[in-house]
Length: 409
Image 1: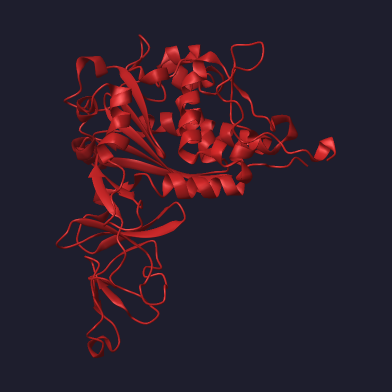
Image 2 (image 1 turned 90 degrees about the vertical axis):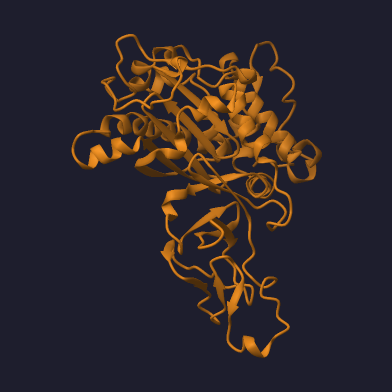
């Protein structure tokens, strides 16, 4: 075989070995961020098997309200029922498979397929269909909407598709989700101080990012780039200019301190709004950040909380929804003109735009011959190596060489 046609290195190649002659560590190869088969494996083995945070629980506050969400390759209906709280189902009619809900959201007493009028209770069972009474042998539970696992935490609805239905056991929420919080906060009680489940939505923004989801996570986890592209953020948190992020290697618990003359986590460092009443002394004037794999970022500051949710669309496109959460009295005060949250929102909105532009300018190079063998991590980025190791072990890529022999040219 001519050298030009030789197979490129596997998508993860010798991640355990340092790069020759330096303290740098290797990254996955460029194909890890562009290969369709890899992305399909990620959808199946990560997003469709782990807990995903999909929407705020108060977005469906009364019985019959529903929203459509996508997790991995599956479209789901999340609905507030009359009897069973929040439930989630595959958006698939059990008759011939048409989408039951065709809009993005709505409110209904029942959920009905528009093809043959198979009708389902909000609790999922089949309750009506043409000629159904003539088919008494049809089990209405068995032919009800196919459910998925649901959990509520921090005022959000989390779903898990593992096992294919709600009768199979999902990954343990305490281990998989709350375990991430313990890693970054030291104990779950530390995040409880922020009372996130009782906060109200001040603003939400949706970003359509032309980049692989892993690039976005890697960017969020490190601050080696902060001095270069985040002037407003490093003014508020000067230690970020040194390249050290709040998220540290081996789960070191670290809150990043505000600058001495900074009054609040705002775009100009001016005072924010009413502080969250139960935060601990070591959480005052500090910013904490957590990545909850595979798709949530939680950012906490003394007077508000910022939560990102990622929804990968393709190997080169990711939707990111960002919520800014404040005390209920603050949201009421905004409506009455007593509070202004615009400077608080603007700071992280600018950070988002700066980060996502960097990711979008990085994505095209993942297909370049110059990046075929991947890049490097500097010492301050070594916690990203933990993410790469998790990704590698989750997909068992080294044991799947037949999928990942990507040819160059």
